[in-house]
Image 1 (cartoon, rainbow, N blue to C red):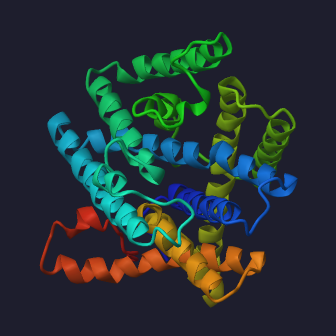
Image 2 (tube, rainbow, N blue to C red):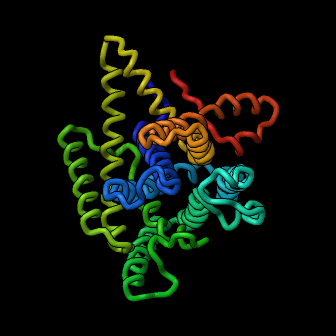
Image 3 (cartoon, helix red, strand yellow):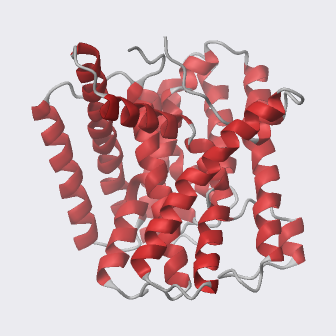
Length: 357
């Protein structure tokens, strides 16, 4: 069985989107009072996840910019970015905020009509990622096309990390922790992770169990040290996040390749493992539509359970995560249907189907 995709990035995107859904589910339950906001366990778990899960997506995006630019002229790259980032940002911002406005009495945070009308810009809620990635990739492409772009981008990434770390400590008014909520600041802050991905190869991963164990231990140590030394500091965040992003990618990519190798070399049919392998890849391939749409079913199932009088935290966690992860996948057949009549549907409902030789 041969999958016509690189397994490392797909497995890493699967891992990342599971953490995204988990993080938003748990935070939603905290805001609803179902989980205690002051619990050491939940607070530290939240901090650990938010240490690296979004940087991991910037890292993965950076891996493929050179490959994309090899196929497209600069102007075509810019047009492509508008279609794959800005159009879904606008569509899903209005969709999500509109539903939240209509359900204002049931959601954790009420939305005003003004909020809905101006939802896409500046980007709100999880859609900040699309805007930041749009800015970063366009800027990076512009420099890469000059011929010495990688060297310049690497230097700029180092400068950004230094300024964000030292400047924040020295009290520069324009700098804040992770530049959260800033229209352009978040793109600037996460820019180094994109560059790190650009400098990495999707095919260069640990090939042995020893390398996997070492990468996994490095990841655990970085997470533990971060939690022990936790403070809202850009310097601390960068230090441990970079380690976690690279080591977690190595671990997840190794697992994906190891499973693929086992399935390829084995003469025995392993139906369950094959199905799980395909499912994990499918989740990774469709991490984008899950990211765009997961808040709606995730919050919806919480509202339904509360209406039914269900307050059990474990049931809410399981139901919220399953809804947020799986229900957006129903948009895959929706996309297939719409594409028969409207080719531009792929930009509003961006999905991918798994194909095997």
